[in-house]
Image 1 (tube, rainbow, N blue to C red):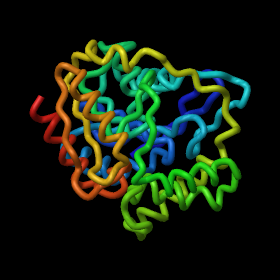
Image 2 (tube, one colour; image 1 turned 135 degrees about the horizontal axis):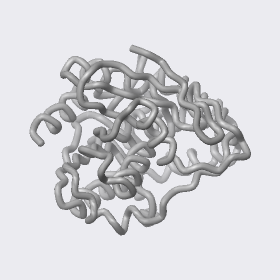
Image 3 (spheres, rainbow, N blue to C red; image 1 turned 90 degrees about the vertical axis):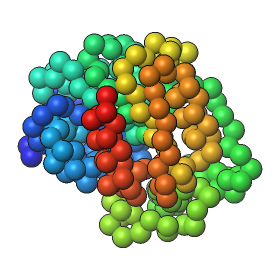
Length: 270
């Protein structure tokens, strides 16, 4: 394993590169950082892949200037260029899926396959959470307004790690500890980076994605994310969707072995 710094416009991106073989670039969620991929990366390396993970701006060990606007997809290209990847498998969780989908549409020749896990998506319509999670959503919103990290972090752990309809603390031990550490860091850095400039077209252009695509969503994830994943899978011509049992929004933390195996089997069967 090797750690690197990739310097790009207004940022020094912290990158981990491990293994040999076809490259996988793994993109983390907005409540995590590159450490979320550690257990999956071990399995992918064992299956013969090279895995690169990096901390996006505002996360982990990446340093970013506060007055520089940026496109997350440009940071992806900077990392791939630095590592010498003309093409790679993109695996994205939540916000990471948004970056991966934007990249696939912008430069399809650089993406060999696409895996979207509980994905968000540029240009997706706004949704209203259903009544079954209203109580936790109300607490979530109040904690965000308070800007109290100590209050917000455990609520986000309940929503994203446990699942909004699951008992708080469903995921414990080192997984929960890592979530609270990663997300605590992200909350601290939230206002220290420049404006993120997202594409506005991905939702309406999903039919243009031609690479083999796997949509994964946790059984315990929020209903609106499950619905969005179904819509995305139906819109992409060469896509399939699989539900990960007993997992919520962050399968790299609560179901890493199952997730890694599903991705490896998908890549083997292309």
